[in-house]
Image 1 (cartoon, protein in one colour):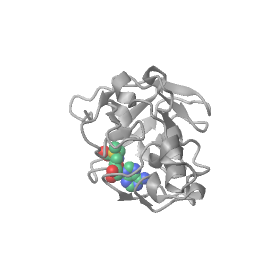
Image 2 (cartoon, helix red, strand yellow; image 1 turned 90 degrees about the vertical axis):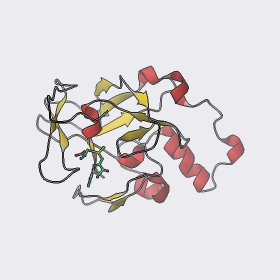
Image 3 (spheres, protein in one colour; image 1 turned 180 degrees about the vertical axis):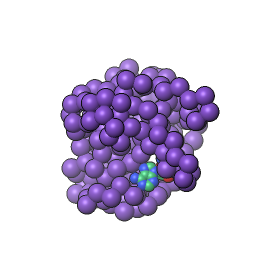
Length: 187
Ligand SMILES: C[S@@+](CC[C@H](N)C(=O)[O-])C[C@H]1O[C@@H](n2cnc3c(N)ncnc32)[C@H](O)[C@@H]1O
């Protein structure tokens, strides 16, 4: 569920608040309410539910098309940047270890962004990125459409995304692909 401005109560007040935009449908963002160090674990990912479909609010949590969760908190307002400030690390086998981490030193008032292709393989709702970074990739469609070079240097990419890249690029065979059950069975 995506929080709205009506009766808004921040879900992570010590970390961030949603800055609701009145200008355009997807122009809201998340602003840091404190300062954080690069590498710091900012929050565990709690209150997740499996997403029935891949949609613009869902976050992929494994290699399969059906491996998607909803964050059900303010964190859903984290926008994409090609030079992100945070990562959603859903790579640990145990979902209790899934967390959000700072990729750089973050100051109070900074916008919290993550690199969407670090979780998303093939997005339902691509968009033209407006991050404005000099390393901006332009159209954001998911990691499937990016080279290893384009994925490298973004701070963090989840394990299954690298697995799918290796499979796509013929550096890994289907047989060597993980047969681990979907992480959703452990949510
Ligand atoms: C989960 S929402 C993030 C919150 C969103 N900004 C909002 O106001 O609801 C994801 C959507 O935000 C927009 N978005 C996120 N990052 C963007 C970026 N760097 N450039 C342009 N649009 C972006 C896209 O429309 C994307 O589908």
